[in-house]
Length: 193
Image (tube, rainbow, N blue to C red; front, top):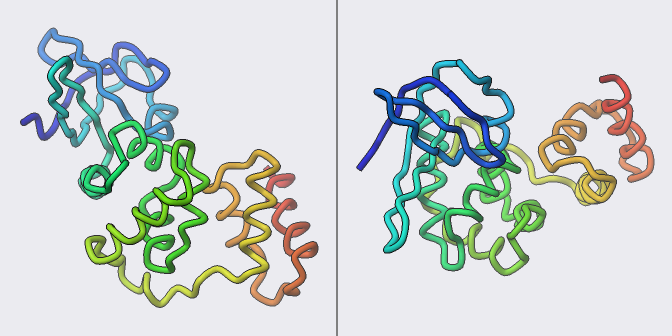
């Protein structure tokens, strides 16, 4: 099993990096946010997971051991293969997945491309006892109904779930609970960029 990979990035593809290790270029499928930050010629250390199939050996790489562990746990969910697991990690960060699982918010997971409502429910059920909470994570309150509507509105407008959640978290604590007002405040975060 290839557990880690250290080398130089020689090429960036749509869903993978080509990492040269000892004169051999290895294609490593990585989450989109990681791929987007990398540059050709840059050195990289990836925590990897090798999937062996009858017709292919496919290597998946992650920035942290925690991300690799989440990928492996997702593969244990019925109906989730490597492409869907990578899609989850490309759309949501570990913290967001943990919050969705511990607060049983499968609607957040169902916004990931390739994950339907039933698969999202299976992910929540499968990961609930397997994921270790970040300190204080279970104390985080579930998203209010108003903020869930704001999240849905922002993702309908084309923002990613991560961008939408970041904007929602930036809404002042004393802001009114009306959906329209909270949406207006969240949209101001995008104008500020």
